[in-house]
Every structure is written in structure tokens, then in C-alpha cells.
Image 1: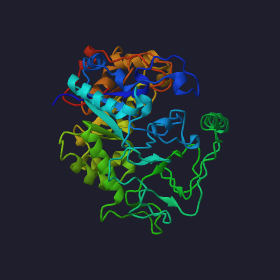
Image 2 (image 1 turned 60 degrees about the vertical axis):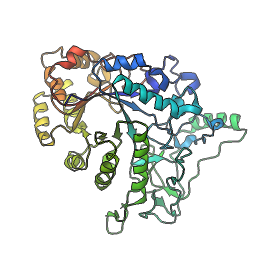
Image 3 (image 1 turned 180 degrees about the horizontal axis):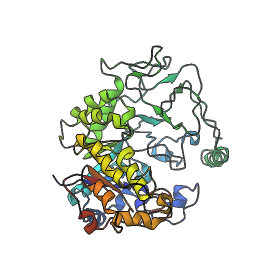
Image 4 (image 1 turned 120 degrees about the vertical axis):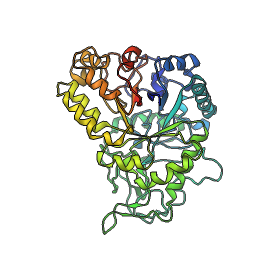
Length: 447
């Protein structure tokens, strides 16, 4: 098998040439990359770097403060959105494309479908995010296929837990959103009033739904995922006798998630990066993955799993690959910052029993840019390890290339002053092909 190299792209920033970068600026002020910017020429350039798969981050429609109501898209309340553009992991419609990424908003799905076709013609496969643990607080699908029931549409919100509910409820309690964004909300309220001629009222949710990071009360804090709500897979986290599971007959949420995966598979998607997969019961994955693969046995499932104690169970459930963040990534980072490189050998020996089921990376959208002074105190330290220009650099690079798949962030290999990999990044930077080829065996790698 050829090594899999996945190239992660934060889609809205990849081709955005707007240099304004205004803090709390609107899309009109700061600009946004588009799906159509990935022309055959651009995709060919990515392919020529040795990439096999492109992971387009943030393409499914998520909550945003941008007003698209003139396209029939409901407005979202700024009190339950983080940032102006919103988080790509606070999905507001599983069956829709982010309108920010479309040249013609009314044809946004067609533009995504055309992008998938261009990728395939170039020899690239397409990965998108599947976010199964939580959705945006104001989730409402306007683009679901006929006959598909919406999440929460049939819930009995008089019950804190019911196997047939899609959400968890804090019965008799109103949601209290963290009061930390007064100035920001005042500005959004002014803009909302100007465009709608009506004052922006405080966000109201009753009964409160449980928050995405397993917060089962109505008072999420500012550090909680308060803009999201937890999905119910048949686990009662607040059972009087302790946590209990209710998987028979099959919970309603399982069926709806299967429909969503099959929908995107029908669009030509070749794989799913499953956000916070370990927060969803492994029994669901055992059930859903074989069913999705009935139409494409080679479909990739990549799991964000941080607990090494769960690795074996998730691999056996059907996942193609799992993040090795707390093992290899953290060890590699410690080595770059002056730690013992011998620890890298111990780390890969600990997970040899998993074979080729681990995904390795030097950075992603959750981690700092390796070639930045925030990572190791000096950007050149990180870049030297990427390129193998230090005597002791070969070991961590080889560790990441010897097995598993490799994922690279767009822009990786360039000096950055920015703390996070994707912020304000427009130009591509890759590992040099001759460097990448050294020490690469038969396992996949994420770029």
C-alpha cells in the first residue's frame, strides 16, 4: 500500500488574499476563501507534493453571525456563537454547505460537488469533518432531504433523558449563557437592529439543553462549549444508579447520524475525520461504520481519540486510523523543545500492537505552528526538525513517517509569527518533497 498523506486545509483561509485582519471584523471586512478557488491548477500543485487526500475543514454549515436570511438561511443569535464567523465544529445544518465558502450562495452545494469532482480528476481523495458529539444550540436543518426528521423535532423535552430523544434536557431550567461578551454583543445588537429594524433580544432556551462537553446543567461557563449541545446516543449520564446505556432497540440518534454519513458519501466524499469520536459510545461506531462501508469498503474513518486506553476498542470498531496526539505528538514536541529523543522509540513501541492504525502529525488546527516562536521559543528550531537539518532531527521525523498515516497542515514548513496554524495564512508551504521521501515506508502520513 502507498503511504497516505492527508493535507488539512482550513478552507475559509486558504485562498483569502484580504490583508485587513481586523479584530472582530466581518466577512466583508476581512474576506473569505472560496471553494471555487481550488482550481485544477491549485489541486495539481497539492498533488505534486505527494499528497493523497485533502481534508477540507469547516465546509458543513455552522452557526455564524453573518446574515444570510435573504437566501432563506435562518439568522443565528450572537450570544451562542464564538467569534464572528463561528466555530466550524458548531454545526447548524448537517445537510448544508457553509455559505461563506460559496461564490453563489444559492448554489453552494453544487460548488462543493464540483470541488469533489475536481479533486477526483486530479487524483486526490476528499475528507471532511463529521462532528457526531454535538451540534450548534440553534441547530435546524433547512436542507435535509424530504422525509428526514430534524434533530430534536420529535423530542420529549419534559424528560431529562429518553433513549428516543436526540438531546438531553435540564427539565424546568432556563439556559444561562456566560455573560462575558457584553461589548461584542452590544455591537452585534446594533448591527442586528440596523438590518432587521428590531432590537436584538437576549438568547432564550427553555428547557436548557445539555452542553456539548458533557455539561448536564443549565449554567455552562465561558470555558465550556456553551455554543453547542450534546447529542444523545442512548447513554444516561445522570442515572441515579450511575451511568447506564440504552442501545436496544437502536436509538433514534444513531439512525439520523447514519443518514448524514450516507448523504455525504453520496456526494463523493472519500473519508470522514470524526471529531471527538471518543465522546460517542464505541457501540455506535461498531454499528454505523460497517453500514456506511457497504457502498464503499475503502471509505476512511479517522477518529479523534485522546485516551490510549480506548485505542484498541476504536480500531476494532472499524476506524481506519486514530490520532496519536497524547503519545507521539506530545513526545515529539517535548523532544523539539529540548527533551529526550529516546522517549520517541518507547512511544512507538507502546503502540506497535495497533499496526498501521495511528495518524501522526506535526501540527493541526488545535496545536501551535511548529515553525513559530510560540512552539519551541524560536521558529527555526521547529523548521530544522521538519527539514531534518539537525543531527538529532532525523529521529522524530522518522518516528512520524515509519508507520501510521501522516497529516500536514497547509502552510507547514514556513516561518510563522502566529500562534495557531491557520490564522492569517494564505501562502502554501510544504515539506520539501526530497525530505518527505526520506525514511518513508508503507504507512500513511498526515501533512
